[in-house]
Image (cartoon, rainbow, N blue to C red; front, side, top):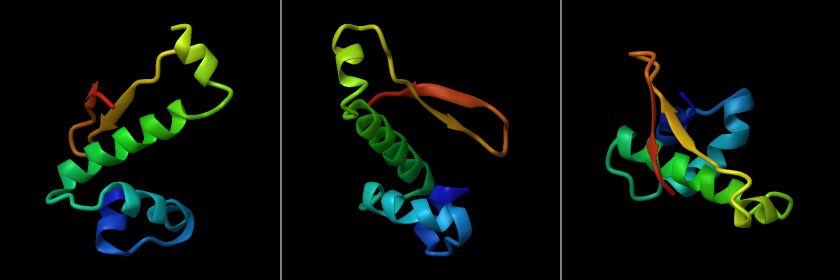
Length: 82
């Protein structure tokens, strides 16, 4: 969805608001799959940098997981690491 729109430059409405962020995260990606993984990793990193969450992460009271929901199969891949 949003990653593909960002790759193709067709982002409008709500997707348009996040497409700029996604484009920055997926620079250099050679496939949609790679772009998706780069976007998820970027999201994990951005959330991990949140000042309110950092103390919880450092104490291992919070774990941030990245996932990819495949629109075609309906499967969720939680194997993405930052």
